[in-house]
Image 1 (cartoon, rainbow, N blue to C red):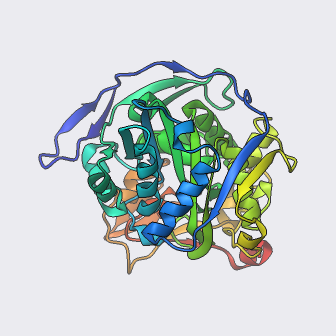
Image 2 (image 1 turned 180 degrees about the vertical axis):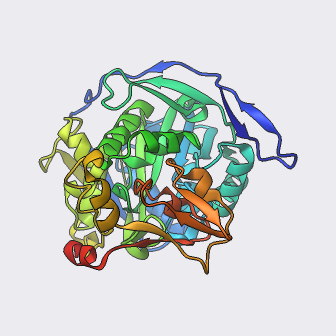
Image 3 (image 1 turned 90 degrees about the horizontal axis):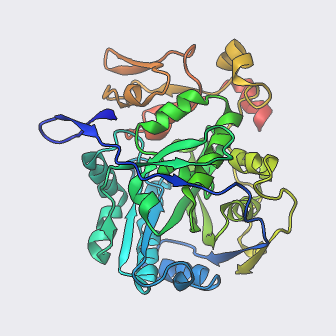
Length: 411
């Protein structure tokens, strides 16, 4: 058992009870038949427009009824990693979630929505995050159940590369069908985040940071993301790529309108499509590259069919990726040492924005952050460049500082 703060008014410490439901996952790469993905243009988050686009993306692949049956439970897992407003392009937009709830409610009355944000995995934390992201409003308006269960389950992946046993969120694992509703955006550690990495959010709360600490090498962490994705056994995926974040994501980038939603049963095919539409290469997604290298999915083009809107009309060629860590992309973390610390991007708390709340220090997997005189300070000798502090700072106080010549090399 782990001890966490419950987050209630009394601040009592309660046991996080591991009422584990044991589940063993089949071998990886067991479903490599030709896939289908769907694409539907959606220029903004107007409710009617989103409902039409989401409905089209589902219907092209058989509709919600091809995923779930009457009486079966469906968990719609958003990207709600932090308490961010819907218009920040950081979280899955609530209109996408609302449209999906309505689609699945035509099939079953057992629809649950939620996520496991970064930070303490408590009901108080979940309520605060879901209230800010708009997910709580979706639940209230549609009657969907808001996932506030903080139980966990042990899941086994016999062929896992980095780990073979995982602690994941029980409510997600116990659902008959887990549907991933990702947000496409850039990500400092994995380059981009989308359908594949969204299932890292099945890891509860602070357990995420322990995994970050164990696998500080970017390539190893990408393999861990693939392991967790496979272990969670999602039934279906839809990606919100209407308004996305480019550049120095996952918090400090700029918003960009890509104008579509896409769906599919295979996240690796879906992520490949999204990268193509953004004018990116397979290697630009570290988790997707790891999956290809392991044989989880093909690396050559043409292994899936795209149904729906014209790809050419929705494609761009100037999507901005984060600045690169020259050394970590070429050498294992244990060899880069001081070179990477001095010549790579680094978190840089801003004194005029930082409130000294200390949350970044609590979340840091390597305890590299302290608060001195009301401002967060980063020990660069201990920092592993996971950028959890930047992603999870609700005040936007942690910026990414990149050496000038590194910016030039990556541009």
